View 1 (tube, rainbow, N blue to C red):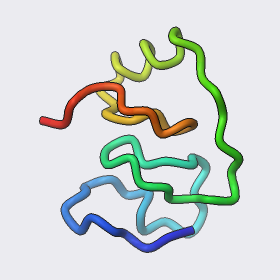
View 2 (tube, helix red, strand yellow; view 1 turned 30 degrees about the vertical axis):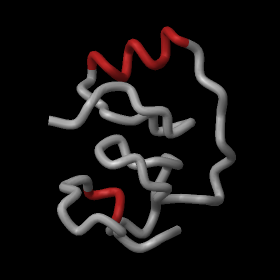
View 3 (cartoon, rainbow, N blue to C red; view 1 turned 180 degrees about the horizontal axis):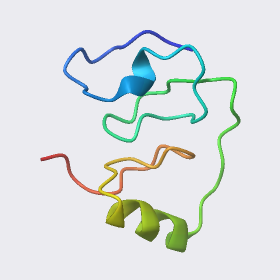
Length: 67
């Protein structure tokens, strides 16, 4: 697990002790490197876009531009 590299990221995954996702959905940084990287289907990315994620929590792909 890595320390927060972007101090402006509001996501709580950067400070948690148990992190269940590989990438932060807001900034895309790896928050838990022990989780293997996955290849996602387009349907999974579409679902995460609807949830307002900027990055995929499994593969780290950019889903939309940050506001």
